[in-house]
Image 1 (cartoon, rainbow, N blue to C red):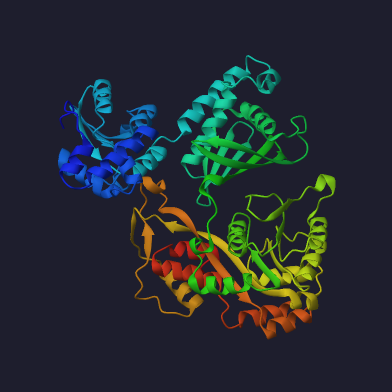
Image 2 (cartoon, rainbow, N blue to C red):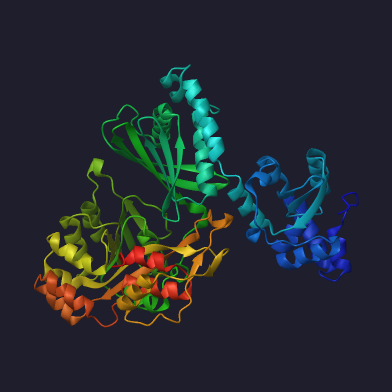
Length: 564
């Protein structure tokens, strides 16, 4: 590729009638305001599609157009080019040969980038054009912070041996201290890996840093066990927790900007044998809330769920284990029913997202502001819909249920394994069955299974025992079904999975189940629920996903139970 000739991409596009002269002038005017690239400006103004622009550049410059998301990359080769340069010039090194290199570029017409990289690499550059969004995702994945975290942990250990811990950590002006840099790298790495949680766990001789990615913990072990106290104290300072209290658990939250995105961090500390364990839940507010149509709820379940959340009164429960997406589902439901003519009040612990027009109250047990006290006051505020973040005790459950039978629509959650167990759990909490039967409309339970990686998906042969188990479980012949799996690639960290999708269990209350509730008969309720027409189980939803190639049979087994 000739890097000496300046390419006027706008003129070329006009000459080849890809865009009009008026569109070029409009884009140049907008580019002057924003300072961005002309190509990106044309795409943002919808003058040309990104794929069409990249194909045009590929033909004009006689260079390949690569799908970098599917390109097999050598991590060592990529990191020959420092991350700062990769991000500055929007490039990635794909091949490093004796005399030349292959460079993926978002803008192959950038002569300044080509000249600078030629000087630094001292080799001939062969350029390939790639989508900018795919390139940035690839850079995030390639330049993980694990090595940097290890180096910063060692630096922090050395500094702690020379300085007093208290003076190092409590100074608000020390922004370049190793502990600050270590935490910044830790959050950067978590965002790049799309982690939902960070676990900091001190052991006798090591410090474990674990990130939950697609529901699975990925571990990094640091030899610097003595830095644990420094890390925990700094996190407590950020969250406004008591740094002198190490004997009791503490909870807090704080916000942080990472890579241009605002993260709301919920932090929990727990005294353990070798110090304090810290778990941080990361909530990314930059993505916004999803609506019900984009949650991935199967159509047959979504239609019935919608019917109940638009009822004038009654109790609708969303249940599942921690981290199963209950709050996301409830917020999506609230967004759908949030109308000017509807008064909505929530009692939450904590308030995770601020919703317009909705009165959200946060529990504060220290001042006596409990779920129950908020609910009592909320009922005097003339609400149409009430959301109770969680039914944790009999008092809260009783008030919420009574509200649902006096003209209010009530949403709430419980931590249970399934829809059937939810009703029996409420009976065990002391809720009278006849009151529950008058209030309860439906229960939707959910969990998350991992999606097969779309970049390395391939046909899979399942074990005969799994096939027999699946057919027996679903009473269905799967002999001709072509199941799928992920082979494992750089896109999914060689796990075969990328992302997660919800599986659901739906139970609508019928006369038989309601009669069992009125009699406080948990056993009869379970039996009647299993025979309820339209009762959809986790296993059915997960098996359908496996049949469609969305997830694997192994995930169906994990969500349902072990194969006999």
